[in-house]
Image (cartoon, rainbow, N blue to C red; front, side, top):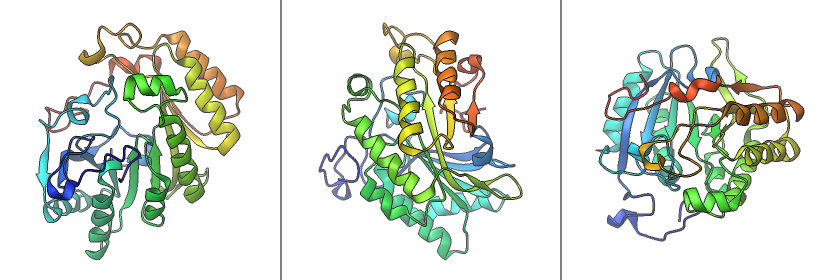
Length: 294
């Protein structure tokens, strides 16, 4: 019952949830990542823990090798996983990111608490698809420093077709409002440029869905603030899973991205990041490699 799926299985007894996994620590990859937004990665990168599986499992997922498959998983115990994270921190890394954490929230809480008990207090980043329960997010208040949600859809029919979750828009809005309550619209950085607290909302523009992207920006502007930090991404590319899809089987067009950029400017957003249009040719992670993004 941790996430909006509420599939009701006993993962502690080895049963498998919608996410595809039981209650063990299933980690697809753990490495120092340099590809996040500048204040998230800091000067030297962030130690990202990529959990296996996902509670959305989008048809077009760019990380489909780990979100929709169990073949890349490593089953860690708490002690070994903490040890691996500490190895990164001892190299001078200041932040730890938990990627796709929504179905592993008790694990994330325990990881943070264990690191703290060992004298490590890294910047913690909750990197999520925003299909989260607000009541679960409230448990992270004071423990998560930076929220990094991806607001995917305002259109429930698209959410149903691509992610099997027609309730996604409402759940994401409630989750992001809770993140905003905890953090507000200002990302605070230290003298090294490392974000130490704040909220950054990501949005990936999908082909054929520029109008939905604009509706998302309109909601953020009216319901939160145009001073919210936005990361607007053009990096979508059709994976083999959707290569023949009539809508998703192509990258976004330059004019689609420009429509959304123009709306971003019109709505008064002035904090955040945009990507070069051709970023879709550069962002091709491969989780068969030890460093998937290099």
